[in-house]
Each structure stands twice: as C-alpha cells, then as structure tokens.
Length: 378
Image 1 (cartoon, one colour):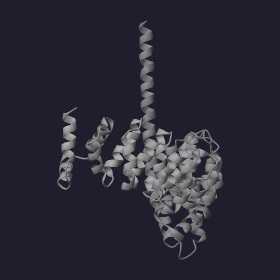
Image 2 (cartoon, helix red, strand yellow; image 1 turned 45 degrees about the vertical axis):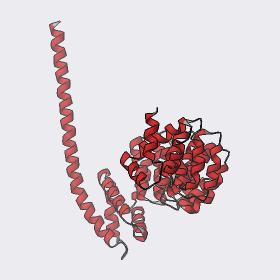
Image 3 (spheres, helix red, strand yellow; image 1 turned 135 degrees about the vertical axis):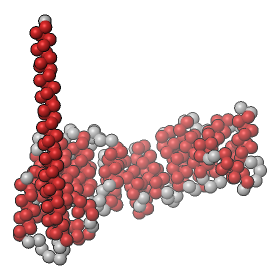
C-alpha cells in the first residue's frame, strides 16, 4: 500500500514538473515570437510607409513589389503586412484608398487571404474572411459569398460583415438573398450588418425592403429607419398596410427614428389594430414624432386592455407639447386606471421641482396639486 502511495506521488510530481516545463517553453516561445514581431514590424512599416507615400505620384517599382511579395512567404510577416494594409485602408478615402487596395491585389495579399479560406481550421478561416473584408478588395467577394454555406454562425456573420465592408451593392443583395429565415443569427446582428454597409445604402434598401423573404424585408425596413434618409419615406410608407404585422411594426418604428410627421394620420389609424404589439409601437412612435395632434388619440389609448399600450401612450402624452395640460384633464376625470398610468409616467420623467416650475408658468388647476390630492385620497 505504501508503494502505491509513493508511486502515485512520483507520477503526480512528474506531471506537475512536465506541465511547468511546458508552460515555461510556451512562454519563452511567445516572448521570442513577440521580439520577432517587433523587429519585423518596424522594417515592414518603414518599407510600406515609403511605398504608400509616393503611390499616387509614381508607380511602385519591381523591386518594391518583390520586397512586399516576399513577406507573404512567412506566416508571421504576412500577418504583419495584412495588419499594416488594413490600417492604411481604414485611414484613407477616395482614389488614394483605391490605390492602396490595388497594391494589396498586385502583391498577392488578397490571393493569400483567399487561399486561407480553404483551411480546415475554422478560426483561421474566419480570420481570413474578416481580413478580406477589411482589405476591401472586390476580388474577395465571390470567395466570401461561398463561405455563407456554413452551419457556423460566426462564419456566416463574418461573411456578411465582410461583404458589407467591401460595399458592393450587387453582392450584398446576393448575400441576403442566399440566407433564409432559419439563419442562426439574431435580427439585431443582421440589422447591425445592414447599418454598417459601406456602399450605396439607398440602393440596397430599395431592393431588399421588397424582398419576398419577410424577415429580410423587416431587417431592411428597420435599418432604413436607422439610416434616417427622408427620401426612403414613400417606400417605407407602403408597408404600413402590409399583411405582415412585423413589417407594419418595422415601418412604424422607422418613421419614429426618422421623426417625420407626414404620415402621422396613417399611424394614428393603426391604433385601432387588433395587434397590441402594433398599438404599443404606434403609441411610442407618436411621442417620437412629437406632433401634439396625436394627443387626443393617445388619451383614448389609456383605456386600452394591454398594459404596454397604456404605458407607451402615457409616456408619449407627457412628452408632447401640451401633453402635461392634457394630463391635468385626465387627473380631473373619473378613469382611475388612466390616472394611475399618467401619474406613473410623470413621476418617471419629471422631478417634483420641475413640476413646481411648470406650475409657475401655467394657470389653475396646478398639476402638483392634482397629483397630491389624488395620491392622498387613495
């Protein structure tokens, strides 16, 4: 029994020592790698700075092209070169930017990243997709598009994001036409990709808002609202009467984000919808549009059977011009539920001192007194 214990201790000690030596080796290896990176980074940066500084004045000579190409023979220097190119591409615009992109293609950097898409290592593949997106070369579009045929959500997200970064309208539309409602990405992620598109947004919105796929159409209606381009309003308006409730809600939200009141009456009509989600959205958006014409309709919603509809209506009322005067009338009425929800909204949005200051500028009855009397009589 004693021998078993001794052997166990020896084996355990050997394992601990082996682990320690492995960690020591890895740390030493990482330090050496960092030293190599620092050394090479300085040389590559100096070479590239010199080339980029004259790229528009004169052609890059063969020796310089060869020097950059040779950096792709080593994985470490290729990584540094990629990062430097991405830095320049993020820093410049216009023809100068296009010259840098053209240079990345000429030295084979884009082809180098495209080849990496064939690796079995999913992390390396995703990194290559991201790099191609940041390099902004249209040469990478077709290979990236093929990466959408995957069950890996990060690869799908990175592929869509890369195409969005490159900013080609045709391929961006193609990419979203390839995905279906079973995609393993959230709507928020898809909207973020749509919002970040670097090409002609109006063109892709006009196309993809009309998509036969309801979830794609909804994404781009919402994104169009985030874009806040009033030229898209007439197209968004068409979805207020769509048979799909999600599209209706997306269109209403878009009007709220844009803040345009030209379709105010149409949104007010939707307050009679059978969908409480649509009524709640309309109630919130009417406050964002900020037209006091909506107050009467919002007051009527304080009797709605759904709490979220009543809450959104109350919050919108007190933020509209003349809304606090309407709150006074509500507090002088007989509807207890309406009084409760409007007081809750007022207490959330205003301090008591702000209400006192408001009362100094208005006639009787005073809002603070109406609130106090109601609470005391409860």
